[in-house]
Length: 535
Length: 50
Image (tube, rainbow over the protein chains, first blue to last red):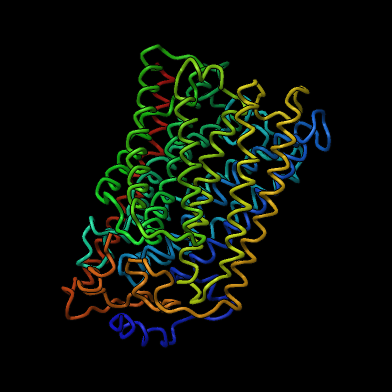
């Protein structure tokens, strides 16, 4: 352990570390930028979550309670955009910023100024999007999918929506370029690709996905913009355009986007499960190939989101079968995580609890996805609460629990202090119980025929909606524990050594806690890498 | 970012070469992103003209 300290210590003392507001505004340090991403993501999580609470408040009882339908639709639209682009994606970029240089033996990201730029785009993008609530005609209400011709009826907030999407996309692309370039060019010479930690691998593949699909979304919304303001008819049937074409282009972006939101969680679970099982990850290479296969398949399944628009039988069969094929590499991953735990010396600290909940609940989301992949069944489920239940099972106990597992896993490394394990365990149990109370009944509602994106519903759906809303309020309140645990840790957590967890392996645990300002000013030696890379 | 120093036990990579590689690969990926952006707009245009 002495070796990294010897190189790191003198650099921590050097005088290049900026202070005050300049440290954050001009930040080029990967940890500072990572911290800003995580704080931004947490803020957006509570704003988007607040909107979810309002949605569930309105749906607590049938009939219009608090909001007019237009505003309700704005809430669902903004909730989705904020949670996807403002909460989950920045959280992953924040974790990537913090962890990738430490895990690959680099001092920082390869392009630190670009890193600063990609972060600082985001506050402007979301200020623009949120300020659309105050313009005439209200915020965008056409859904996050922005299908024409409905979205073209948006009022003054339309250009704000389009510009904010462009900004979010630009930020993601720049961040992705930085991640790829860092992993490919900055990793320690002895750290070959098949020795990289799974979190780095999943992020590398995620970054390729981002570069491929975010420009596609940008192109689609640019065409919406020109249709709205410059008289083009890309998606306007009256002028010879094709609204369904938009759906194809959107979902060519949208489906890989789902994997962008979940793949880094796979990486985190692959770090956490071995640590708390005190065993190496079962089938490391199979995990890498499974992630790559999932990423490849994500490009050829997009039309399963739009079976009901009508398409040739051969296309329906192709998209149904290719979608089902994703279950194979996903099954490999779930099997390998389970096999890692098999006969392991398991302990159940908060990161492991979140990882286990991920394993069970993400699998439920995966199974309902398989049901939705079946064309004739999809005709029944389309646009019902079953779909809402499905993707929330993937994104909340999937992505969000993955983020929480990651934060609880690495927080002691970042701060040099251990957090209140009891409080974090409370956070876990409240989250795990209420997330099921919130989303499981939505399966029943959907199967009974309750449509999504409506502020009012038929009275027979009342009971399960009430249960779902109670779950939402419980889940929302439980999340307040999360920032509290973090703040308490930063202020008064007990000091820890290099390794926060007995079974942890990886280069990040070879650095002191908290790590030096520039992580690895000298690449780690083969011996250090061999010690850290015990998969 | 500070220049990276290297230790004796790791083969010292040529810093200038690495910087060039970083710049080139960043530009390459930016170009790919731009190509996807205009490519999809172009594809929709071509499809509309048929």
